Image 1 (tube, rainbow, N blue to C red):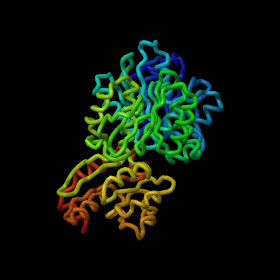
Image 2: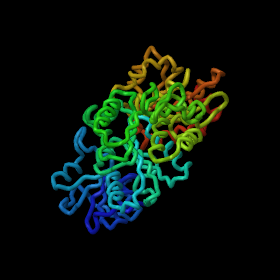
Image 3: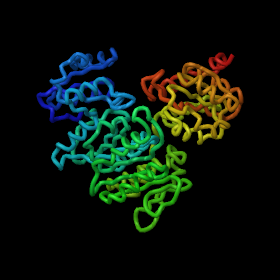
Image 4: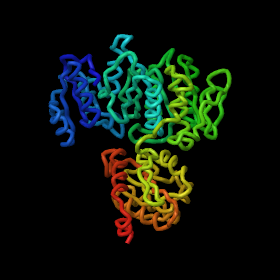
Length: 471
């Protein structure tokens, strides 16, 4: 745990008692603060009580007693409208912070020799894989590495800092909205495409939130920017003009005179006098496809920004074991392979997996994003059959009408059984792909829970049961 100081003897309200909120509450208490916790969900309040943390109904509380409001990132800050806790905090002049901001303040308050190195990663797609990949490279190179944030362990639940540590942190746009003083040694903006637009009031608000990862960098810091989309290209041009930090453009689609790029699976470092081939990504079994080549370019650039040798960085790319819920093979039954891509919560992410297979049996659906799956129309001919779950089922069925066979399945277990039965009946090599192109919140707590439900359904399959499901 990382104790959060600066609120000694004062009370901090904490709203939202999932992983982030509870970790922040414990860190605040460890730093000498008093806390008042609340969640509209009974299970959240029960989790706090089980840990001995004090509850206070914030709807009726005296807000003049609070020094700050620690807001969980999933709670709306500005759009579609501010949450009532945000309105209350502003009414009483209470500062609103997130867990990443508390972490940043803990780092900034530490003596210089105790401050760790920080790598912060954001982007619409690929940030979890890139975060895990950088963590793997750093650990393989002998660095004391802690990986967390929006992936795995909440940042304040990571082991306390020291000067030799490296924190590799995935940051969502929600977390960035609540962060003002984080100064990463390496900041990575992988890519930007439309996502979470309702939460940010449109594309400009979303881009502005992502750009906050670069806010406090200066001389000696490294900014790694994906330039394969117009927003990333624009941001890279703008911060290059500022000329304060080391800027490394990355690409998975074009050669560049300066930067790190991948072409046809070969990774090149063009940050020196000439472009040098540093890795053959076609041999990296856990990094298939162009999207993963961009992740590899970012991870390599981050490692170099931390002073890790090119050789050690390249070796880390080759030995990376992969990430759960991202194009993860979770089982094989006969000639049918099951691929868990639950992390694909939007169409851009789903495209990456769908483009990797010539044909597949597609499990899709959940809580739909703006635009549905229209953007995937060019990939519909690859779909052997679509097995639809969750709120999006009816809309997806309408979109796919006349373009691919569909079956409304309702639940993950039914979808897996039906998809397996159809795939096995063909008697050929086949892929059952969970790549939902949707958020998970209609049926699951998060994409991890959805992926684990897929894994459990695959593990529970037997040939007779699957044949029965098909009948």
